[in-house]
Length: 323
Image 1: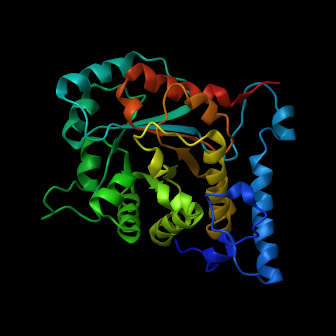
Image 2: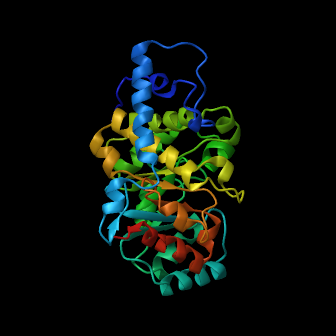
Image 3: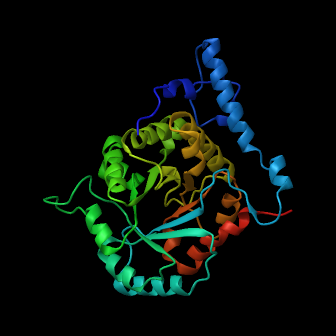
């Protein structure tokens, strides 16, 4: 699905007075045309309208209404990364099987490839299975890779693509990741599409630039957004113990949703779930979940602890708006 031709620059430039976006976008050193300035002000006025801690509609909402800007179901994924043994995974699966999980949440776990079959054969059907990566096309002579067809054969329904560790450690680029997503979607897997900036990119005011560029690579390649969940994971918060504040995460989530609206469609912007990842744990998940554009989480280390992961899943209750 190709994106509109509107340049990212026109969305990212803006007046210096918008200091609340420090660290997210570069400051403007030259006077812009009135048309460009007006468009930029309109964009950020839209963002500010979403950033209010409580809108009038939220205050008037009845008990049980979920405060989500999008229309998708809350989504929590557990990325086990390169962790675990047969014994530790058996214990983790037992903990997950006995956990009481809120019903209105899609829950997915991504074990190491070696243990996918073990988990599939023992994990409750309440929780879906994901791969942590997949090859860009049909399997064959690609040593060390795993194909979409193999993931489907083992029972996986999702795959994580574009994770920062694949981008910055393994060296996968935006276009390659976009092609992998397109192939996975065409073959019937759902895609957890990861985006996010490094610390130096945030400090240089390039958060939006980086995230939008990564989004564009997905949008240029994928046939549909029906089975895509976007995971915003600031690289500086992954495994560091540092977590973006609820306000910082919300700012980016609002911008991502607006980018989808402007460059793909309003329907896709509404339906696509935008989840947060980066040192999410049982202690901070409820506060993060209260933000209306945070539609769930992609969890790393805390997903290796069954009870804590259940707490994060159940953070959906923080979205319930009291009368």
